[in-house]
Image (cartoon, rainbow, N blue to C red; front, side, top):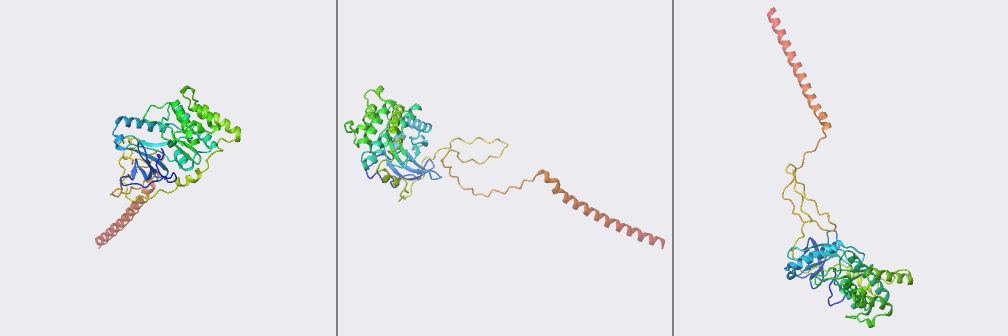
Length: 366
């Protein structure tokens, strides 16, 4: 997920929400626009805990295509199962409803296309780090039996701690591992020359070898990403002992603060969530003899719980539970009181009866 290429300064990533933009998508708060691409609008969104996401909402005309929905669902599933240090992780997604969407972690940095537009070509050491990182990202995809299918400068984000590959899982053509390596070569060549389309004749000599191999005409002559990454790391370690010595590239630090800033406040009230995300799984039915337990909040990380209406009634307070072992002690004072009253009553009754007998005896004697 990334801000698509757009005109304007690369250091102004957040665009104000427009009338008609939703306030929520899938339960996530929509904060700002990141851009508009071929598939739809990309928003800056946030979880309940404040974690930022890049959330792509698909255009309605694409959502009406059942074949597209199937491919989009496959893309979400693929993104959630693959992991790699230079891949932007897919957090959530929903292929149903009127507006399918997918959310990835927000990478606070410009696209490679925007960075080169703003500052010119990257220095050679930074391009070598870029090549290494992208090769590792592609290898993680290929190890999961996936291919990116659309690796290009606008699908590479430059963060302070390294590049990230986004939007893997092409929806337009059948991807392949050799095709990914070819696009890796073109992307690195663009980073080194700043030209579109890039020209190998302007490639720095230090980068010509690995890039030229990636651009080999025959697919079987292109290196595997794993092999390319190992060669780059070995060469860099021989030079300065640190493959990351060329990162971040000069000029990138000036662009990064804008991606950590607060987004602009919306002028108009955004619309409600058009398609709330479904619960991850339906609650289990309660046993007939047991009371229904309250629904537990979602256990998925960073997925907000559903908004629940406040009850319009007061729940009666439950009587306190008494320990059975204390029951006899609670009864004894009551029984003792009954015995005391009985003794008193008998004593009074016996005295009155005796007095009556004495009076009758005196009357009889007289």
